[in-house]
Image 1 (cartoon, rainbow, N blue to C red):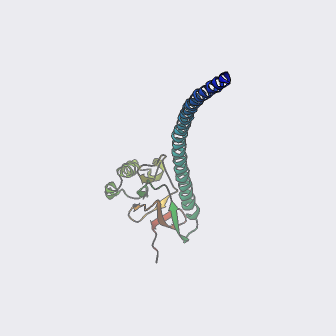
Image 2: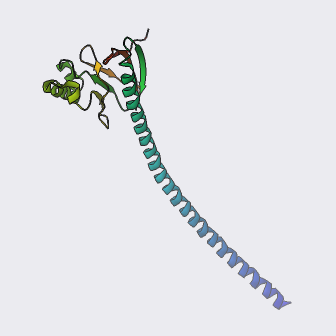
Length: 190
């Protein structure tokens, strides 16, 4: 009986030791799982943030090129429809705060320099070359500058240019077909 009791006590001690070791192993295992989870989460956050940033940037580029195509097409479409008038609303990325259109065939007007120095320089160069519209690569100017040059079909503007503020990524324009060009002015809603 004494030997059996001693054997049972020995088994209890060994069970307690192995139980403590199992608990320590479980603790180490939990720390390892936590570390792997934290590292995985960090990678997902870093790459996810980068992917979302790229996605938004590409979305703005698409929005800009849609705007560019839309404005070029609407101005070219109406010029031959003599007497037709349309008011168009345009959307572009919110980063732009101003748009200027320049009639490169009209007499150079220094007042444009107060609104857009680049547009002023292009117009002055086109005016002094004597070729006007045909001598320039652009006649539409954005603030901040557009990623590509924008040139719409020949326009007619009372002062030779028109600059408008862009509010929340949108502006409105009045288009009138003159037969050989499109007259531009600010849209007036009544």
